[in-house]
Image 1 (cartoon, rainbow, N blue to C red):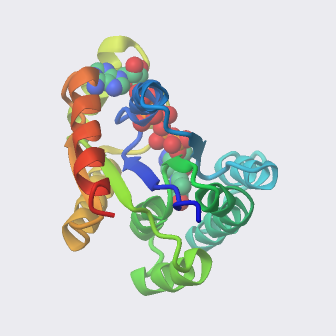
Image 2: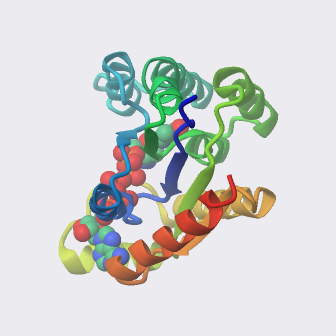
Length: 210
Ligand code: Z5A
């Protein structure tokens, strides 16, 4: 029987370095001959990418309510799970996903959807397909904004105020505290090489026991 693949998710505030870490992990997985499917949410399948576009870039002067946003994220997630994540895991391929259900818990709860509504949706949508490991890239949003300013890459990060980003950070840290066996918090203000080293250490430690 094929051993099921490992399911790893990356979480954190905007610009925390998820894409950068994924590049490093991808090289390391290749070096170790581990088959890995790298994907993202919202998105990851043709239909879910359509939902992403609609959710993140609604037509001009239109906007989604917080609950509608939560439903869209879950609609995209279900398609992604059914058509890509579960089939990959069943074949023994690892899945590395840039954001997953914890982003809905964090962003949509900060936007005002009650936690019990979000958890009920999550349970119905993901069922038993929970990540084996979630790496949370954590940083003070003010320090992240400074990093981006220094690089001249200010963008959507500035569109929402600092309090919003502080709330998102607190929401991710609360998830990590509630589920320490699944989540590892990584200091995102370290060098990219150190962030990668911490991530690999967490992967090696946690997945040895799965
Ligand atoms: N969302 C939601 O509301 N509900 C949900 O359920 C889901 C998502 C799944 C899209 O996310 C939005 O969807 C997101 C939440 C919502 N945003 N909002 N609002 P996304 O993942 O597509 O976008 P993002 O979070 O903004 O990611 P990003 O901009 O792609 O950032 P990143 O991948 O975390 O960072 P990066 O691109 O790797 O790095 C940013 C910059 O910092 C770049 O110039 C790097 O070279 C630099 N960098 C990276 N690491 C380092 C270190 N260690 N040191 C110095 N500089 C670094």
